[in-house]
Length: 87
Image (cartoon, rainbow, N blue to C red; front, side):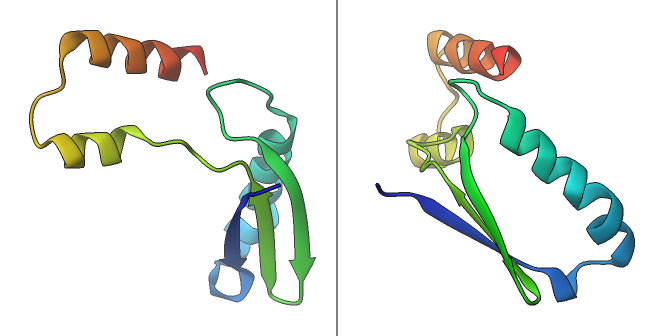
């Protein structure tokens, strides 16, 4: 299986975020199951790094807009807006 890995350097994170917000965010990400949200497969912590193994995105809105360099057509905007709101 092919997946993406996000590496987080915990030593560069402020203590409040590391102790309070990061655990909540990780817990939420692991519990969410939705077709428009990237799925988390597994999380490993080694010394001062956290490795988050996740589904690979097929693309995103920011890259699409940068590639096109033009206003998005309404039908595409409606589709992407629906997906964001649904998620």
